[in-house]
Image 1 (cartoon, helix red, strand yellow):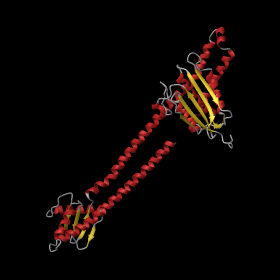
Image 2: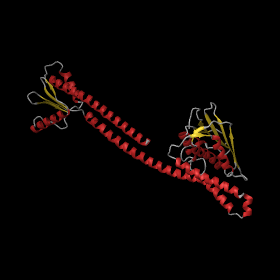
Image 3: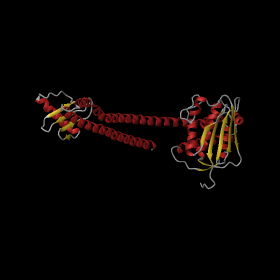
Image 4: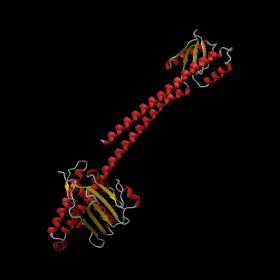
Length: 396
């Protein structure tokens, strides 16, 4: 919808600019044409003066005549008796002694009258005049440029449509990748529990009780159900409720606690909550998705090397927002990616798809009216999420 509005606006703007340009150029042509009319009248008057050698200003008038002729305005002066008194700057050679040439001049004078109304000068005759050569060329300039602009607009439209099509295809690919990204954790966990269930009873009981296995499988199934709910919300306006951010973060802590590496290179996740955090207005499914992406990214960064992840939630300085900081002690974000880390397809992880942070920013900023920034840390990475709290007069 927005793309169509932009396209309509650009078309209207282009039409307005083109119309203004044509009118403006036409005004220039009319102005130059008016000068040509004045010059033609002056030419006839000077020509009449030059024909009288008794005038003292003969030489001055002759110089003026030469100067006017050099401007290139085609002029045909027909005397009151119908004879051709003068013909200058014609597109052909005029031979006054040739009757066919005289007819050609009269026909040319009629064509000049189609462009400009002839001037009647008492005592001289009728002055037929055309446009200077530069005006003839100028008349075609706006149409040439208009055609060029139209071609540019058509090419730009084609490029725009191609870009939109490529963006749509990229979005489909991105969503497919995010689907795999979201499903990977619960599916991997379910695969692990299946392997445990296949163990002999004695070995299985040493790893986990049957009740524990059932509980964890139930958690993973619930996680898959949440993934389905998340994708159902894409493209829709979600229902906004009063959400306790602390509860969302604690659920994530419990979910990741059983799935983080605990052996040689372990990963430790801690969630620290300021007491009595005010609730925020949001969608719990989408907020959990956003924070899960941040924690999952930190886990992926620390995989194979171990480390700590700290999630701290507290009110901001003026108490109008809840601030959530997700910090890890991994290698951090490369300097060349810091400004683009939230863009689609940009990832600091080798083989990363650059999807999670883009979706997280959209959930936080576009859906919940909050903000997410990359903190300035020399070691590790810190993502700071700010969400507005529920107003006291808000009803849900």
